[in-house]
Image (cartoon, rainbow, N blue to C red; front, side, top):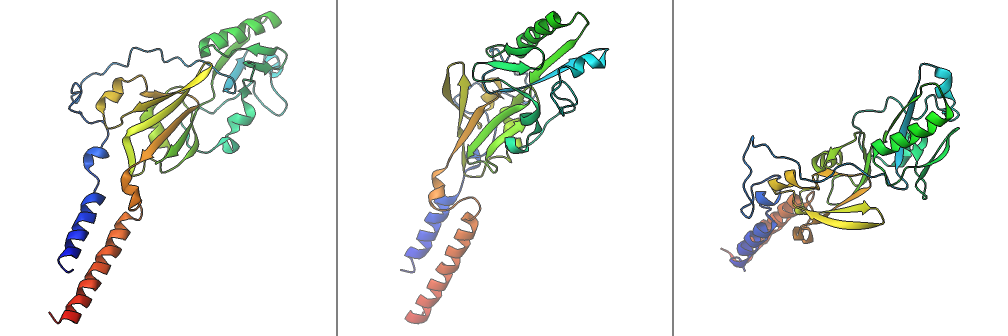
Length: 274
């Protein structure tokens, strides 16, 4: 029995160890063309312009030399036509803590936004620039004076599930964000997350697709999924080691096992008299 216990402890320790290769980002994996440090990596040949969808929230600002004109497009208790002063990056939280949810212009199920004085304007299925031009055309028909329009997505909203240190609906106040921006904004992944199996559930016009990416692979920098999009859902699977313990209590579990092992050996020595 005394001979088997150390072997059992070593076996448990061996299966509990996590290789650095499983947790290190941006490696040069052997199956791919190596990417060296300082090497220029062009973005994937894809169109990164986001297409507006129903239930998106957009920011619409109006500017004119005549302030009275822009006030006509402001909702009650909203000092500007749309939003202002909300640039930069921001972290976490759901819509309950997000002022853009209450002050922005929400695209309804029919793909329209309702702007004071202008009524409903269909902008779903368009890029930000195309939607801006559509609103500008509508306002040009309403006023002869010059009123300029700025329209943009009110931050990138995405959801994290699984082995993230912070899960839930997150917001990044930028018009473009990488997968690593999303990871950092979500408190990083847990130690037990399968970084080679991050699933992106992405909304498309008329449906949804599930994509799998490998964060261990340096080739992600040239992937079309290097940039996240609004409404993405990021799900990371746990490693099988979770059957033994999670990242927080694994060390404590091993320490407890080691203590029990030492106590058992001591009792055996006392009983056998060796």
